[in-house]
Image 1: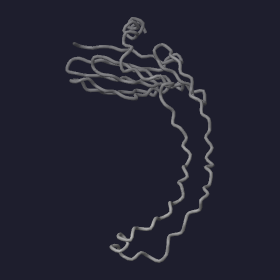
Image 2 (image 1 turned 90 degrees about the vertical axis):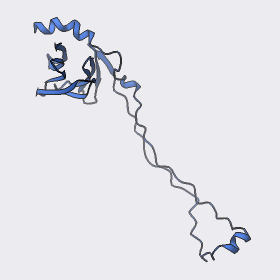
Image 3 (image 1 turned 180 degrees about the vertical axis):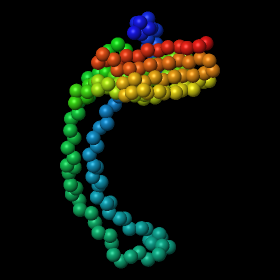
Length: 178
């Protein structure tokens, strides 16, 4: 516990201003697209006499014409509202219709970048982890509420430790070795 308090300035400094996730309101929503009615088939034009003489005889039956009327689209678009987005202690928070909060945060360290997601149900997960050149990434998860992401090079590691603690997300960034 004392180490977490001591590392709070490091955690606050680890906030990545570059490469952060976009605000959920900036992500375009998928629109509902109704089926499109095609126009009726255009009337065929007769070929010129020169073309008609050089082409093979055409069939005696003409294809049936399409009806000029079309059926109106009956798809009903339902209005969707975007979940409200807030920021709590560096975490981007959205609340779903079921009341479940989702917390997302991007971390950038010398060893790489990681995006961590937590839910108010206490589940911690890794969204992405991209190691920097010369580093390897490793994830460990001892329980659904406790996960660590390691960016390792020989004798040197950066660790992002994320847990669900006291009904809130908590993350600690550490560096070991040199």
